[in-house]
Image 1 (cartoon, one colour):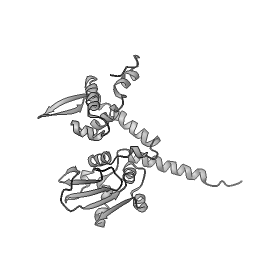
Image 2: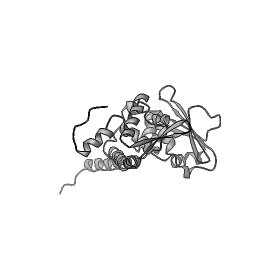
Image 3: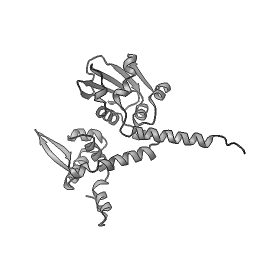
Image 4: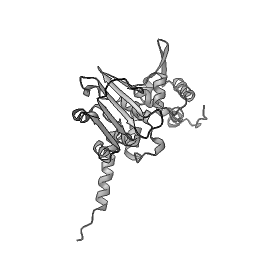
Length: 244
């Protein structure tokens, strides 16, 4: 365990538990509904499994998380103290979307994390009465992460790495950046389509509903509002003044 701050201040003591590297993201995954170790790891794919185990143990010791045996598998759940972190984590996300949501670096793009986030945010109540299969093809993703299938049927959404063997409803061809920026609120879908960096193939009636079915990232609305405000301020500052 890392050395503490050595202060009685509860900000310091709280930070000792929650501000270790990766810990806020582990809490984020738990708040998003991930319960099992493998699901938690899918949300933090660049974190080693040994470090994830260590951080979960630390959160258990702090009374933020508890383990529950479900059959032969452990599930991790937030305690009352852990649930109280929800508005804190949400506020941090909205703050980041409002003030730090500038253009993403290449090393911040991750097709697997993007698809995992999209899968758990699908708007179940908006889905069509028939089986929906969306095939995502990333033209520039890492080897092994270029093909994904999102399958929604009878209120259940699955994310597949292998072809389910059925005709897709829609095919989305995109760069990782373009779809990430649409998902995070940095780019409007029509702008991504106009740029040619994102293409949607399939019946027009289904293509028009794609974004209603998928929704957007949790903080996308905040990011979009901040982007529009910034663009508006830029336009105002560049407007010619009127001499009096």
